[in-house]
Length: 353
Ligand SMILES: Cc1ncc(COP(=O)(O)O)c(C=O)c1O
Image (cartoon, rainbow, N blue to C red; front, side, top):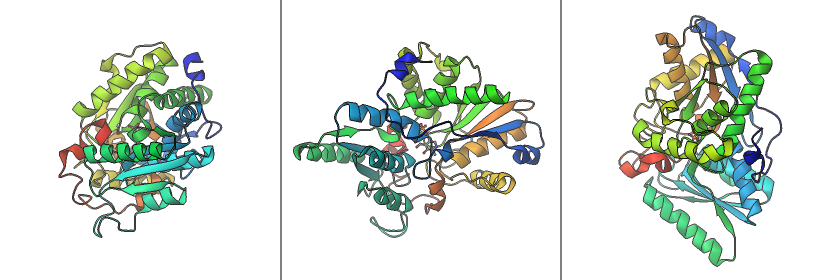
């Protein structure tokens, strides 16, 4: 359907669509005023799943096309993008190097365990550098040093941005939007809105572009989980502009809808509303969301339903994955170096998705 995307190099990591189904017991628990559906990106098949596998099909495709022999990327210690990069690298036979920006698991020093995200990254074969700080400049310097070292050793690294955002990764999210439309048509359940967590904004930009390319006018509401509106919006605008030649459509910035109501004290810091949303979904539908991304998006969706915003509408919750985050030791602050350092959270590159 989109020849410019079909022409991009792609390394297949999964087959078939992620499930799309209704949430009838959650609907009833919320008073039956809104029809609720879920897109199960958490069920994409590698390494506990998650929507970043979509980006990685195009990122690994580009790496292979360039003759790279290794992947380098970075994120916070719970990064789903990092774990899935490790998994994708394993599938493609590429070495994976991860820079995890700090702080490590709270309460027990810089190299402390338990650190579930890192444990999974290493199980998947990645080489991990754990930084003691979440400072963005320190993270970027560590990535640059790592890449220089690999090149000196005769390796050919391909560097993936935080969260796999921008092009070519967001092309995968365009296809996810089109996939949703196919399923919605088949089920007679075209959504009026999609509610998704938004950290680097690549998912939101790609979904919006995909829905519009497929002829849908559904709103795509990005629930802020990492940084405030003013910092994320320009990144989404830039990704939409970069996607326009691939989809043949320019999307006006006014279409970018962001909801900051669930962010709480910031990235990776739990909120009571997210916890309550997690319990409600678990106890009505038997589904799990994670405290860092998807529970906050769900909390915003539930608050919207309760406020009457979605009365009589059909809304799709974008379950982007991230469930291993349930096992991350998160305290109120995530330790020194997270919130004390403004650069840690600033901007889409700082989110560390
Ligand atoms: C589970 C999950 N949901 C949502 C997001 C946010 O996606 P994006 O960075 O494309 O905004 C991420 C990012 O890593 C994620 O891991």
